[in-house]
Image (cartoon, rainbow over all chains, first blue to last red; front, side):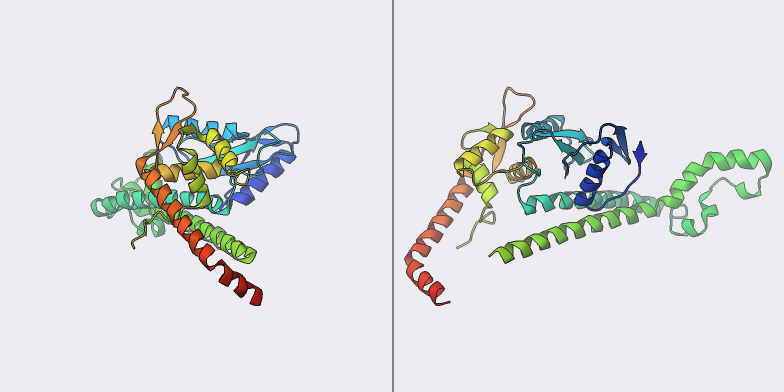
Length: 211
Length: 112
C-alpha cells in the first residue's frame, strides 16, 4: 500500500508510522511516498534521524552503530538523508537520542539541506533568468501560453497543433513551475528551522525549571 | 585571557574525547563512556553519531585505519587532546574556586 503524506514534525511522523504498524502495516520504503507491507499488527518503536552521506563506508559505519545499539534500519537512502529505524532489542534505549540538543539537531540538518537546495536552485535559475528571461518568469504562471515557444503554435489546428502541443508540454510545464521550486525549498527550510528553534526553546525551558 | 572557542565542552563531548585516548569504534565508545561515568552517561546511537561527526569536523578526532569494513575506528587528535586538557584545567580551577568559597556559599544558601 502506498500513502502520500507530508510532515514537518519528526515526532508526529514517528507516531503515525507506529500507528500504521499497530494496524498491521509495516513501513517498507520511503521515496516521495510511503510504501507499507501487510503484516501482523505489531507494537513497534520507530525513530527517525537525518544524515545525508556521500561516502558508502561512512554510511556503513553509521548503520552498524545503530545495529550494535539494537536499532535496525528499515527505510531511507544513503544520500537522501531521512533514515527510519526500528528497535530490535528490548534492552535497547527507548530513543536514538539521549539528550534534547542532539534530538533537535536533526531539524537543523534538514533545514540546512533545504537551504542548500534553495541556494543551488537560485544560482542555476538566476543564470537562466538572464539568458532566457522571456521564458522563465513569474509571468509564465499567469500567462501559461507564453511558455510554449513553438512559433505560431496557437494558430495551428488539428493534428499539427496536438503533436506540437504534446511534445512541448513537458518543457512548458517545467518553465511554468520553475519559479515555484525555490519558493517551496525556502518554505521547507524555514519550517524546519522553526521546528529546531522550538525544540531548543522547550529544552531550555525544561532545563531552567529543573534548576 | 582569551579562552578557546571550543570551551566549555559538553558532558557528551568530554566523555567521548576521554574515551578515545584508546582508539575505538562507535559501539565500543558507548560502552567505554558508560564505564568511565559509572553508568551515569548512557549515550544513544543518534547522539553519539552527531557528536562524532562534529568532533571530526572540528579535527578533534580522526579516523584510524582498521580491519573491520563495517565499523570505523576513531582516535583523538593532538588538537582534541589539547582542548580536553584545557577543559580539564578550566574545571579544576572552577572546583578550587568553589572549594575556597564553599563556606561563604553554604552560609548564603542557608540564609536564603
